[in-house]
Amino acid sequence: MTLDSLRFDNAWARLPEDFFTRVSPATWKNTRLLDISPRGCRALGLDPVCFDDDAPARETLRQLMGGETVLPGMAPLAQKYTGHQFGVYNPALGDGRGLLMGEAQTADGYWDLHLKGAGQTPYSRFGDGRAVLRSSVREYLAGEAMAGLGVPTTLALALATNDEKVQRERVEPGATLLRLAPSHVRFGHFEWLYQSRRHDDMRRLVDHVIERHRPALAASESPAVALFGDVVARTARLIAAWQAYGFVHAVMNTDNMSILGLTLDYGPYAFMDAYDPRLVPNHTDANGRYAFDQQPGVGLWNLSVLGQSLTPLAEPDALRDRLTEYEPALQQEYARLMRARLGLESVVEGDAQLVQDWLTLLAEAGADYHRAFRALGEWAVDDGEWLRQEVPVEGLSAWLSRYRERLQEEERDAASRRDAMQAVNPLYVLRTHLAQQVIEAAEAGDEAPLVEFRRLLADPFTARPGMERWAAAPPPQASVICLSCSS
Ligand code: AMP
Ligand code: MG
Image 1 (cartoon, protein in one colour):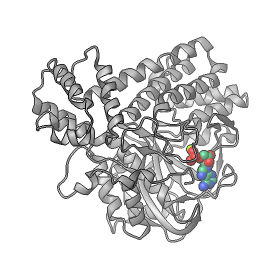
Image 2 (tube, rainbow, N blue to C red; image 1 turned 90 degrees about the vertical axis):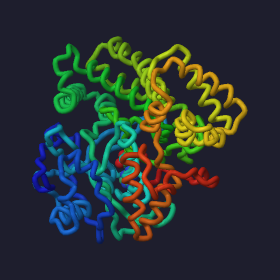
Image 3 (cartoon, helix red, strand yellow; image 1 turned 60 degrees about the vertical axis):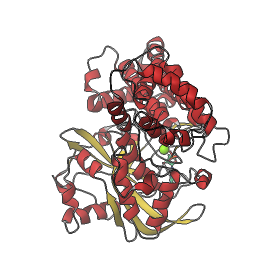
């Protein structure tokens, strides 16, 4: 399949007319492709070779990302939604700098092609509708990294830069990202219809999501309750994975929460270096509302806002019942992921405490979250020297004796346990300072580091010769990089 053979079936455009505004993408100066994602290609059923250097599809894609063309069957539009930002309802949201270009129908289902950085829309308010290269690189790599870890996420087909000068804290090069997701429906879409008392339209939206994305729920007695239960379960699993892999989203506003349980809208996110449950990578979040250790609670808060929005369609008690499934589901999934990270196959009482005490050690040592797990994996077969370097605290030996004792319950030998641990504990992590290096190179016209890092993140568990610098411990100054929402 090549780009031209994509077929579009734009269901959003068939929803009531104020669900969106048709907008043509702006045309940017001298758009250049920086990278095309093999994962994004696979999602759409495209063969990456169709984008080889002289292939016509490569030029078509470049033009698409520069606003110079749209593909046959696309019908670009900006979606309307609202949401709670930092706890406060904001009715004036919507796609302000991105357009849903079309909904591709593939063998595996539907994929939104969403061009981020496509110019102003009626929902831009005071924004310029543009995206800068810095944040677009960060979003591009984040999709790859999350997918590489097995965490649900939006993806991207490609990243491009252009010769536009975009004013942020400094003047920065512009960029566009062709984002992919089965759907971009957000909690905020439902909040909008609830707050404006559009109950029939909300029913249409529920039906739309179920028909397109959750057909198994179509026969449910109450579609709204069934869909809510599905969102609760997926959000629980999503946030469990964030906690297990040390990811801080940093802007968990309800307009950034996906109905499909995907990680959506990457802004000032971070994968933590030193383990720090209080980490707040967004320097404008002074109160730490979206700190790492707040994410499970914020997920519950956001789900309760969604549940409230669905009350015109369903019994509040039925919705509340589904909401109570969130915490146990999150804990269960978190326990499963952390057991795997510790190399434990069996389930034994006390595992949660063992995990907690390991994390307490890491916090006390200021240990690097990711390297500590790799080192623990090696400890099973080496002399433990690396682990002692990574987690230099007195309590380590006592914890290791408990861990050793716990391993008696396991059937695997040490070498296969090590292999299993290294297959779930990433060697290559999307650290903020590494993303920064990639960004600086890309801004200087060199996309090679971007491509190299993207390849590693796509399979972050397998060591590649010559790639040691991407797996190195972060330098001490790494933690001072400041991230803001202005993207
Ligand atoms: P975000 O913080 O990325 O989730 O964005 C919050 C809201 O601001 C959304 O409605 C965006 O569409 C809008 N927005 C963010 N950046 C821009 C921009 N540069 N131009 C126009 N709208 C923007
Ligand atoms: Mg957003």
